Structure formats: C-alpha cells, structure tokens
Amino acid sequence: MFITLEGIEGCGKSTQIRRIKTFLESKGMTVVQTLEPGGSALGATLRAILLNPKNSDITGLTELFLYLADRSQHISSVIKPALDRGEAVLCDRFADSTVVYQGYGRGLDPKLLHQLNSVAVNSIWPDITFLLDLEPEIGLKRALTRNFQENKHATEGRFEAENLAFHTRIREGYLTWAALNRDRFVVIDATGSREDTFAAIKKHIHFKLQANKI
Ligand code: TMP
Image (cartoon, rainbow, N blue to C red):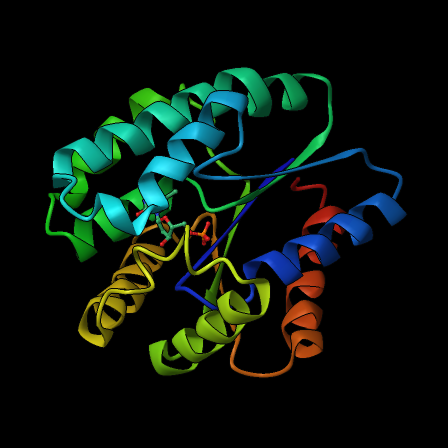
C-alpha cells in the first residue's frame, strides 16, 4: 500500500502522516514513513540544496531536475524495496508536488512534468493521495509559527518566502490536478482541527481496507 500526502505549506501533512502511521500499525502493518525531497541518503543532501533560501538564483529547470533526481533515487532505494517487502509506504509529498509547484507555481508545462515524473517513478504510483486543502492565508500562518517554534527558518523556507499569490496558485493548481486524477486523489478539508482532519482521512482508509482496494 502506497499513500502520499500533498498540500500547501502549513496544511498539517507531518502531523497527519504520524497519525496514519500509528493507525496502520495498529492494524498490524509494517509502515515506512518517508518524504520528498529528502527520503533517501542522497536525497537529504538534495533537500538541503533545494530548500536553502541562499539558492534563490536556481533556475526553474535546475530545480526540476534536482526534484526528479531525488525522486528517482527515493523510488529505487526506499519506496520500491519497501513495497516489494509487502510494507505500507507513507510519503510526505511525491510526484504531484512537482506538477503543482514547478508547473502551476513556476509556469512549466504540467503535461511535460507528468511525463518526466513517469520516468522518475518507474511505474510506481500511489494507491491514495490525500490532498489536505485549506486557504493559503491560514496555511502560511501555521507554517511560519511552526518554523519559528522549530527554529528552522535559517535553513529552510525558500518556498515559504514566496508571496501569497504564489501560494494561491499552488492551492488552485492542487485542486485542478486532483480533479484530473480522481482515481487516486481524495481532497480533505484541513481547515478544522487536527482531529477532524484525521477522522476524515481514517474514514477513507478504513473504507479502502474494508473494500480490499489497498
Ligand atoms: P516540505 O517537505 O517541508 O513540505 O517542503 C518541501 C518544499 O519543496 C515545498 O515548498 C514544496 C517543494 N517541492 C517542490 O517544489 N517540488 C517537488 O517535487 C517537491 C517534492 C517539493
């Protein structure tokens, strides 16, 4: 079972992924929790480069190829081996982030990005992708509070520094892309409490497990 979480900054992916992990483990599954960029050993170095605000002069294409390199390595060294062992994989961001951030956000062609993703993922696509949807104003406020609390604003946050118009494009891009990929996307309203958001996610996973669809 391969589940990914997507959404704008501050939508609560990390909190929900931890809860999903506990839930699946309570059902007796072995779960690999991972993320993009940065889910492999090489990826950790790529993440530091990609998210460093000092690299703001990086070109759109350079950025794209670094994300794809991260993904390709992540698939072959972490995700595929875990799925082959019969384990569940929970991934914080995946190929859809490239279509949305580099495509709808930065202006590259979403169709081309989808094709490049297809090469990078080597036919491995998620069974379910949860899009945690909320207003960018609320998400950014939450992300800034979190960065301040975790004191990580010095090394991360290149995208969080983008303006509200960029994040609004990202949110709309996600909703457009989710509507085009209804077979695996589930849009969850993440405006409410963490408990409400998790209840909606759990209901869906439960339904899929019951129906033996994952
Ligand atoms: P996060 O993992 O802390 O949510 O943030 C990672 C950032 O990287 C986020 O702003 C989205 C961005 N990103 C892309 O632009 N393209 C990608 O393909 C991925 C995986 C992430």
